Amino acid sequence: MTKSFAHKLGKGGFGTVYMGNLPNGRDIAVKLLNSSNDDGQEFMNEVATITRISHVNVVTLLGYCLQGTKRALIYEYMPNGSLERFSFGQDSEGKISLSWKKLFEIMVGIARGLEYLHRGCSNHIVHFDIKPHNILLDKDFCPKISDFGLAKLCMKKDSIVSIDGARGTIGYIAPEIFSKQFGKISSKSDVYSYGMMILEMVGARNNINNCSETSSKYFPQWVYEHLEEYCDDAGEVGTADCADNELVRKLITVGLWCIQLQPENRPSMTRVIEMLESRPNDLQIPPQNLLC
Image (cartoon, rainbow, N blue to C red; front, side):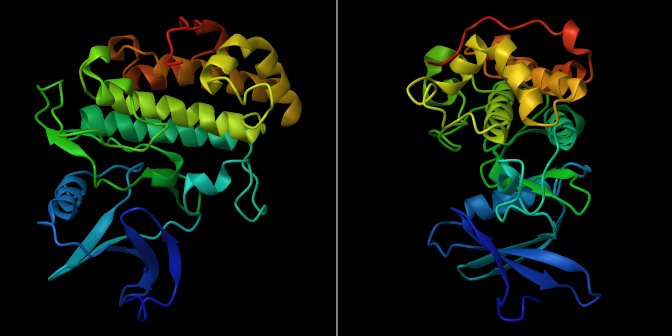
């Protein structure tokens, strides 16, 4: 299917992804996992998790291969790669630019996918690794959540999740995952990662992250302190459109709510969607209760 792994699409911490084709001509992405001598728990976890779900904003698993220590996952192909490619508004080659409206639509789609994982499918699923690299974009830039290797399944009635050790990616991990003093681990841990992803994408889109003024300060705190002027600047950097300014303000406000220190102070993904669909003036600025 991959013609001897001729076309590499990318490489991550758990393996390499190759372009392929099914016999009917359909394009696919084959994720060849790193060889290991473990019991294959992570591999079977991803298979077991993703085969239970079906949503427009979650990547579709078409099949898998298992031969000794060799393991591969076969996914639908996403022509526009990962959201990480567009961190600065354009793709990694500077060819395709994401407008504020498109970025906003992508964030809404991701929120809908997470809401489904947390509430809409037969089992409660916490992803534990929400970040731009794990958001794939189809030909129409519809976002799809991918990479369920760290996901945790539990019964719907269980709101608290039990895990062995920390999991996730530095910069996106909720504080309760590495210290119990911040609260219990739950779907609100994904909400935190989602909020950090929003702030990262908005900040990078305006080249703010590397600004000398923010280099020695926790970025979300800087955004909070400069919210009004930052939103004004965001509109100017983009298209100087008032509508763009409102979208940026909504994204930042929702992002700051999502990264509240205590899990109970963060909104559910259902509430996040409501906030994103509300008018900007209806959103209250959250308290400055952030991890500094």
